[in-house]
Length: 257
Ligand SMILES: [Zn+2]
Ligand SMILES: [Zn+2]
Image 1 (tube, helix red, strand yellow):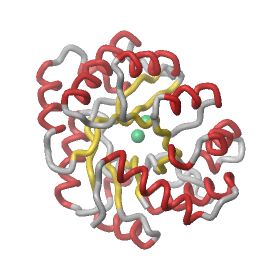
Image 2 (spheres, helix red, strand yellow):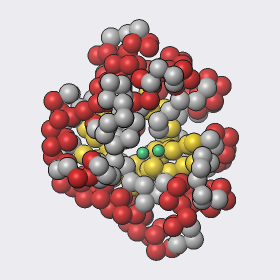
Image 3 (cartoon, rainbow, N blue to C red):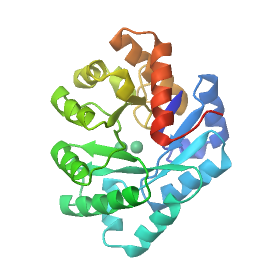
């Protein structure tokens, strides 16, 4: 299994030796982890983790909540471009728009997003998209730039929006919040989306699935996300494992060892 969205370097996970976290993940059958950047420092840490640990791959990017510090900053943009060219960097992310209690103005978020989209297209890298309360704006911008390889992470939007993403060949990635009993819309998105358009993630250290809800999340728990998808779809969990594994390998262009 892949955990396609982890933040091993964020607290409190960052306090632990990453080798230990990866060892526990492997015990649960999680053999590949994509570590995600949210700003320049965490993107640099992502690249360093990937160089240090065989199971870890890196994504680099500026999160919409961090967009204020990158706005019109040529130095930051140059550093991100350099990072994108490093070994084992398999995607640009996480990038997107976040209109939920985010002090960064939408115009600033959009500028930073569009700049990064151009970078991803020039370097032929897939995009890991963070979207909160910004469905229409994110969709319009990604479509305008004709982005082909896109995953919406921590997904849980309604069927109408899901249909629009699937029609463009984009993927969605589910996290531990699909195990929360009140998250009916997220569970319906699991039921509605075909297995060949789904990836799985933890978004650790956040979003720990039931029965670990409220605790520190870690890549080992992505197995619980796969099991919940199997339960909701009424299929064997091995089927979910195989499909999400194949989708992630193709999306991130990671071969078999
Ligand atoms: Zn996110
Ligand atoms: Zn994240």
